[in-house]
Image (cartoon, rainbow, N blue to C red; front, side, top):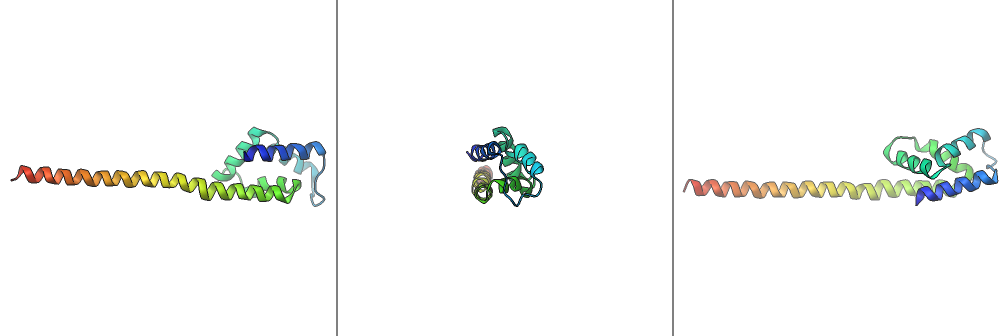
Length: 121
């Protein structure tokens, strides 16, 4: 959903042919906007790279600044939600699996001790 939103905003902005007045190099801004947000595939790759460390956040958020501050805010909300919520849930699933495995090992040790005790009685 985030990729669609950013792609749509970039497309509409590029079609309108306007950049914010604080943009120093208009050609560079357009090139970065097209590179990172110009298609749905590029947006998806950019979003994945942003959460996985494959690209610097500042590099991909600056073209969104040319569109408007709201798109920068949405990008940071996406990052915060993805990094703090979704990835923590995935980590919790792996931790729970490790805890369950350790509990199973504890049961196996107890069964082995009971079997050894019976063998020596």
